Length: 253
Image 1: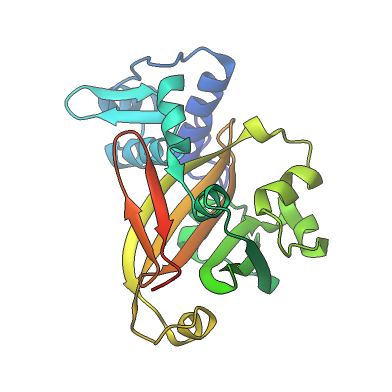
Image 2: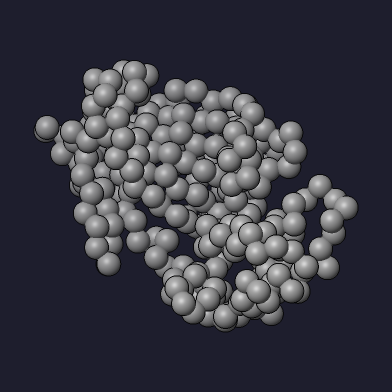
C-alpha cells in the first residue's frame, strides 16, 4: 500500500492515506483510528513512522489524541475551537480602534527544513515571505511574519497587501470560499524583542513581547500558511478561558 520506491516519505504517505479516508467519509468524525501497532502491521513500518504521521494529522486538526484511549477523527464540535481565539484585529474592530497595515517586505526565499515539513513543500520548493507592521490608532502594535508555499500562492507578490487581511487577498486570488480556510494550532509564547523587531515596534531590544504562532489549513488538510504575530508586552495582554481566548490592547501604556 505504501510505495518505498518514491521520494515521498513513508510517514507522509500514511498522512495522505488517512487524510483521504477522512475526506471520503470512510473515517467518520469521532471515529477511533487503528492503534499505532495496527498501523505498523498494516503498512509494515516502524512505530516512530506511524507516530510522526499521527502527529502531523493532529497538527492539521484532522485527528485528536486522547491519552490512554487512542487517536480519533476530529469531530465538527472540535473544529469550532479553532475560531475561539479573538485576534488583534478583532479587538481593534470591537473597540473602534482604527488599524493601518504597512508592508515591510515581500519576497521569495528558501524555507528551513522544519518549515518545509510543516507546509508539506515539494523538494526545492520555496516560500513567499510577507512581513507586515500594523498600527492601532497610529501606535505600532503588531509585526506579522507569514510564509506561503510559493508555487500555490505566487500571485500574492503582485498584490497590494497594504491595509487588507491576508486571508482576503488569498480568497480574492483563488477559488476558495471563506469556509474553506480555518486556523489550527495557536501557540502563545513570551519572548524578547530583537533589534529589528524593537525598531519597528518602537521598543527597546530585549523588551518582553508576545509571539502568537499559527497555521492556516484548507478543509482537506492542505497547509495554507504559517504565521508568527509579534506584539509588544507593554501594550498587550491576553485573557484565556474555556469559552474564548483574546488579546487586549492598552494603547495608553
